[in-house]
Amino acid sequence: MRKYFKLVIAALILLVFIGTFVFLWRKSQPQPVVYEEFYPTMGDISKTSIVTGKIEPRNEVSVKPQISGIITEILKEAGDHVTQGEVIAKVKVIPDMNQLSAAEARVRLARINESQAKTDLDREQVLYDKGLVSREEYEKSLQAHKQSSEEVRAAEDNLEVVRDGVSRSNASASSTLIRSTISGLILDIPVKVGNSVILSNTFNDGTTIATVANMGDLIFRGNIDETEVGQLVVGMPMLITIGAMQDLKFSASLEYISPKAVENNGANQFEIKAAVHVPGESRIRSGYSANAEIVLANASHVVTLPESAIVFEGDSTFVYLVHGTAENKSYERRTVKTGLSDGLKIEVKSGVTTKDLVRGPKKVESTE
Image 1 (cartoon, rainbow, N blue to C red):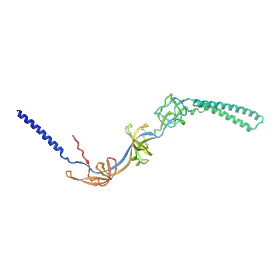
Image 2 (tube, rainbow, N blue to C red):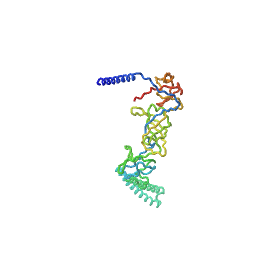
Image 3 (tube, one colour):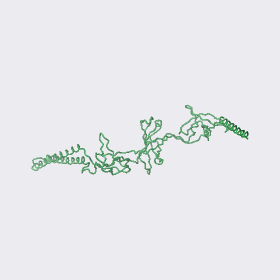
């Protein structure tokens, strides 16, 4: 019994050894090379470039105060539509002491001059009534008194503007009322009630009360690589895609190509701008990231092949034509002239027809 058991074990080991040897021998045998094969087809090829950028309003205006002071009331909020001249906020004036002192001094001087002009006019009036002075002299005194009275009113108005930010004579155009300078959408109001604001001057840009833009006139702004900018022409159509709005797509037209490059991550790029044709029902927000697809070149109804079927050697291009049967194939090397490529397909201008079977790359066998 033991002898029989030993024979079975030995037979199993021998079978495993023989099976392993056969498997390794078969794996070591050269496998036939199998290639993919293609017939050239007629089709269209387009070479496109994708530019990353963002959507912006063409006109975006910062509304600034005409006087320095403190915000007392904000009448609008971001997202509201305003018309030109509509009040956005109100400012309480904090007068500059030097300007206030000068305005008060101007009022006092104007009143002194008016009082003296009134005295001179009364004197001339008495003399004129007695016929001692000419009418011309009397009218000069009358004119001087009118001018002094007007100067008093102007000085008082100036004092009220310096002190209160508004005068009785120009209450409708008060500089304490911050008005929108354009019609559009309020994008941002960076101030709050109680914030101090200053007017724009030589040394300061002034405080921005609100940012207003016309969202009906949008542009796409992006950068394109220097290797492709030479193929762009103003007026070229573009397709804009906004991923944040469920891949919303709409058309645009190129209207600006920067004449100067800027360096971006070590590469020279040129800024481009395109006028965006926005559908009326779309609500696009300023600053959305977007991609612009530009067709740099296209070829219609041409012979095409997968680019993987083309052999490139220096400045020459070749293909291998397939001849023979499935069991006995031969390959003919033929020179071809290529044209436009989109990265997957390439135009073949000469060398093959749609009836020629062309060898492609080697087939990759899946390992299971």
